[in-house]
Image 1 (cartoon, rainbow over the protein chains, first blue to last red):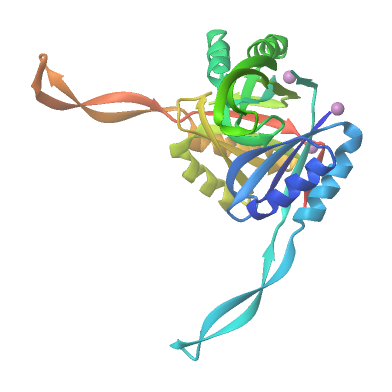
Image 2: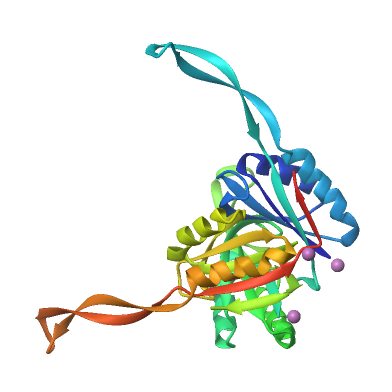
Length: 109
Length: 109
Length: 109
Ligand code: NI
Ligand code: NI
Ligand code: NI
């Protein structure tokens, strides 16, 4: 058995858990904050058979991969606080830090 | 040293911590939710000497073992929302997922 | 890679994270309570290269070391609830429980 500990962004956690459950994996979500990634993190524990490790890591990578996203923001023009125009900005979202740890003994009761 | 990570039901956590403390074990409770078990989970960390691992695992199994329990529920009879009768239903409560992990280095300061 | 899991007192967590970030370490804070130390704990996860383990452990020891502290308390004198005098008391604060665990596989995406 391996224990996969993944620190991901909150906003990716719903989709990640859905993808993992669809493939039959059991997960536990821990509340967590800041650090490895920007604030608003979730730590997820997933217990897997050794041969399933790469499948779980691939699912996390696919769902949580750090990617650029265009968001529309509003900004004052020419210093005047009265003239705002919407304009697109590229931000980086997502990202995951994944630790795979060997499990000596595993029990479900 | 081993680190025992146990994901248990919230409602079993008070009794489990009491049993572990009685036997001299030190524990840390992490907030957690859903996944391995039904929602309302607690994750407990317990650092133990190698030879104490089976004692801790046995305590967790004894306290948190998944078991059937009769609960009384109310339900409409014959489709009429006005005629409810209390009746007993068997539900499964408890359960634990336990990971035992080898610890390279342990320090208490 | 190693995963350092440190259970520390809440009041030491700001200073610890600052010291770790200053040295370039990435951390995740988990909410936790009671057990290893008095209530009001924080669990911190730090992923490190093998050769950095002792540096991280030393930082945790330095910041979180259990130490005596004088606090001023008020107490009734001679049983009369009307005569309080401030007087100094020595209390133990801080402390940390540190687990270093070997990581099979580490990914950042
Ligand atoms: Ni294994
Ligand atoms: Ni050991
Ligand atoms: Ni290593």
